[in-house]
Amino acid sequence: MTKKNPGAGSGTDTPGLTHAGTYLPEQLRQETAKRKRKRLVPESISTLIQRGLEIEAEEALDAGALAFMCRVMVMASLPHSHIAGSEFERRNGAFTLSILARSQVGLPYGTIPRLLLCWLTTEAVKTQNRELVLGDSLSAFMRQLGLEATGGANGSIGRLKNQSRRLFGSTITATYEGVDRTAEMGYRIADGSMLWWNAKNPAQGSLWESTVTLTEKFFNEVTARPVPIDLRALRELKRSPLTLDVYVWLTFRMSYLKKPSEVSWGALQGQFGANYAQTPTGLRHFKAEFIKALAKVSEVYRGAKANPTATGLQLAPGRPHIRKLTGIQ
Image (cartoon, rainbow, N blue to C red; front, side, top):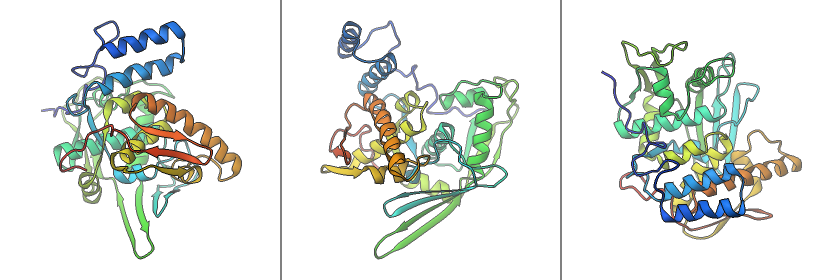
């Protein structure tokens, strides 16, 4: 028997959301007409505006699009692109995220490990089980990640297999070094996996279900205090790992922000800028890319009050993207 995923099918087919050419809310029709008349924004941003309005029209929980992300991966991000070597470290204030990979395999990077972590965390929270069922076919599982199964040297199937191996084979260490206390926790993500998939025929089912068994430490970490996010927003922003990171972090930060605050560009680069040199030039490049990513996130999460300044990112209390959930936040 194949276990159905609670979050599957919650993209454009989510109940209550609309497809192009069908009925749209009045606010969305007006926004679309305004863009057509004045051509104020490029098409890619126009699409994000439309989806952003749709997302705001319905709560993620009610739409079946409620997902979760591991908190330690929100506080400091994975590499955005390939990094040579087998060690990686990101710092966010007193918090440090360290990743150690097998030298023959390498470190996880890009959007796929982020989508995998979201799926693993969401399934663990929903099922309260360490053994997670991925499905009876490769293409079915990839649809849950919002990916289309494509072959070839640069296809999504090869990238998923490669990044899965990198992610599941890595050891993660989370360290907090405060003035009067220090805490450290290290773990692997999975104890093991059984993948009965046919890469040459990804739609073909299997006699057995593919599974991943989370380690007890990782399972306890992700189920204790997961970060709620909107799966529809994640799928809209999945082309850029930096944009995904900014969305998840901003959703988390706005959920508890009580007064205006500013995060310096240096601190943001330390948290998100894994692939930028720690130089004035590297900081300028990071700042430019962060602002581009923030513009895309703001079209999906329209209630976020985040404004770039010369010295950093100015944040003000606003409407959380996910309403507070009893027993979760």
